[in-house]
Image 1 (cartoon, rainbow, N blue to C red):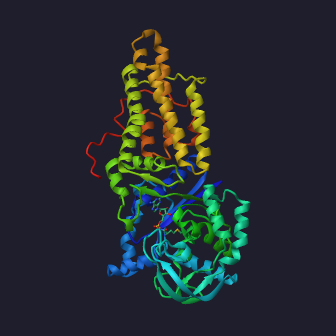
Image 2: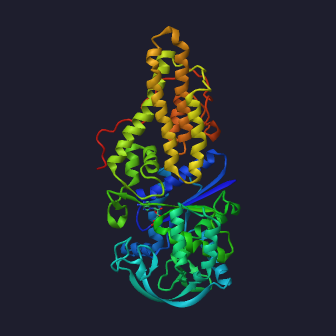
Image 3: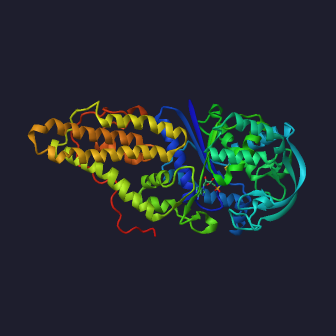
Length: 502
Ligand code: MSP
């Protein structure tokens, strides 16, 4: 079984912000989890370079588009590395392999009779890189970008999207989980049912792009180029393989139509299988406004990571808003979770547990499992419920299940009071059991959390002297090995008293 997951390829007209990090981190959590389950995984991300808006920014800076993208791509390549995303390939739409593949792909669509020439006279929003109708506008403006679209009139090559209406509806009918969450599938379906208009797959007035194979005076429309990345990568990325197709796509609601309607139709036309599944998540809004460069309220994810470390940012992304819904976020909320949940619930639990083992047992953890105990049952819940939630892309729900377990361990400390057991020579066995339960619980939590908090998980396992094998089968009660030499662990999430980021 293989799990091939993609993020959108991001526009390089500016540098990454926390909204882009959001999708990349969410994707990484899913991929790491599937890897823990022993599946073959492939994780693709990258950048979308041939946009009109990219050419315009280059021109503003007095650069050729190619020169400009060579400079800015560095900031984008840094993003997955800094958020600790375990990607397999970073695709650029200026890659030679991609360009060749797109030409071949469009030729197949053309050969299939789905392309004709016509004049496009209408509106175009450069922010969306999309043709707009009056229905798409609010007070004459694009609601996503707050600007009036431009009027363009040019002779283009059109794709017969309209002739795919019935096939697409049948696809949605046959595969109720094709697009998740369900309300997003309904959105796509009603868009299709309202009637599909053919769309232009070429641009005549632009030179920055991939030449149309049968008419090299025009370049491919940026979406007809960008969407194909998900497939083209498999033809040349090292370690990739055509057999990984069909992919699962992660994206936000801003680009639902392109992914859930245009892309399956283009694939059917070119003779490829449609995607395995698409998950459409919501927007993170900072202090009630969509985070976007044009609105000027961006948070640089790298600043947050510099200050707090990468795992707290990953944790926050997964936890702050139920994945799939829109949500308002604040930096204060981030700090509260850092201190309360990471610092207290998890960090203190490790500090206390290791300190007690060091103090009462001279660093020796003895084997004393209690298979009938409550914690054994709680571990089974984590083992079963987390994969089930992640199979629905519910990274928030799965994390809540793990956090319930972490909180359960904290209650266990309060209930058993090991510091009192340590005073009573008749309760040696009870003390050993309590310490074992806590160490085992922390080990289980670490393995379960490792998709979310890869660095922290390794630190916890090392502090407990346990194997760093994170295969999902180790999310099971009583597998903690007896060891000696455990020392009181330093805090996992130290307090940061004067945060530099306002
Ligand atoms: N280049 C196109 C995608 C082509 S894919 C074949 C594009 N690029 S983009 O840079 O605008 O990225 C949009 C994506 O970035 C969203 O779909 C989402 O994944 C992510 N996000 C950007 N801002 C975001 C938020 N404020 N909140 C959540 N996700 C955000 O569209």
